[in-house]
Image (cartoon, rainbow, N blue to C red; front, top):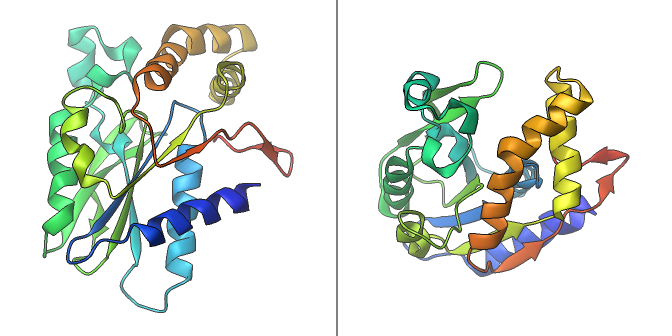
Length: 223
């Protein structure tokens, strides 16, 4: 059940709490794996457990570091949006490293899927917030520059359903965006699934692995 996975992640975070530096937790996995929903639920659960005006945990999605369409299009990368080369990876890694020891408020971008743009300074991290959960496809990639931020993560989680399950979820995702089933499947296979295979094949081993191959009250836990 989803509740059990949230509890397992929260227990892992509790066991890896850092002293005198902020605890940063990475939740990674291929597109449509359920990492975003899991990360959001974990942060909500951690904050619910505390009785403080300062958030105990804050969520930073890697999607905020998408390069703008105006940058991607002239480079021929717009059809590949979501692939590693379509992110400001260096900027992302630098920003995550700053989280560990910063004693002042920090601001991070957030991606708006409906507008298809990243919104600057949309997420605030309070200087006294002890835990930050970061979620994204490529966080555990065993290659530079992703590897340069590996030592910043106090705990890592990887979610990986089967490729068959991911294909089904990705097709449904594009259908929800108005594509017919055939076009949705073609879209998933042309970009999303190759990205998923890259993540599964090249990610480092995590402290906790989840498969997320189930449904929760009749609704797929992926969107």
